[in-house]
Image (cartoon, rainbow over all chains, first blue to last red; front, top):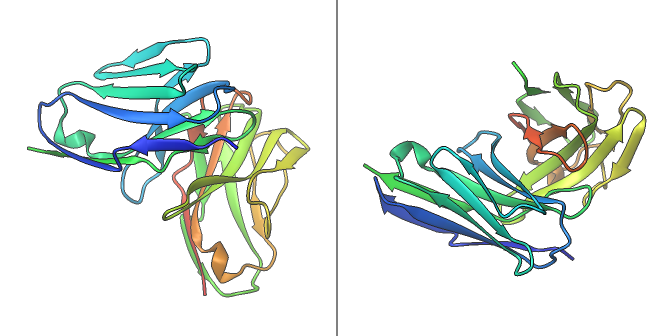
Length: 110
Length: 112
């Protein structure tokens, strides 16, 4: 059964710092991996989608990598800002459902 | 604006009183699904639909029903809600099964 783990569960950094969020999954048979952002009491905003044949995707200050063979993905956030404070969720798609990790809650202080 | 909408956003009800949470998308997506989010358990899929009139169970379907009579709508039906269905519910859609999924704003349901 596919399991997704995100480490750390929580992270606090000062503004301007570059940071990396980690995601690992147990079964490499996936179609794609998607990173989301969730603000308190709000819905999920899609940040980046990496197809299984891709190694990385970039959007603005965000860069996500995928190493399917080792079951790992990282989300790199450059020059963090207080507005980046949120919970970041990683999800893999082995078949019909997205399987989510429990998220990393990021707090960026000014 | 391309979006997934859900109604209601908040609902407090009592055990056994049938309710429907609506979901609609304006992106002509074929694939739609429902998830619930619970503290400590994360997001889990309830039901999904690959296209009109095609639905199937996800990981936690007990106590729920769905229908897909039109491409844009995918309502979630709780015939006899129970307190263990108190949760935050999300509807999601994508062009096809393996494409990027877009989520609605969520419906917070409390069953007393």
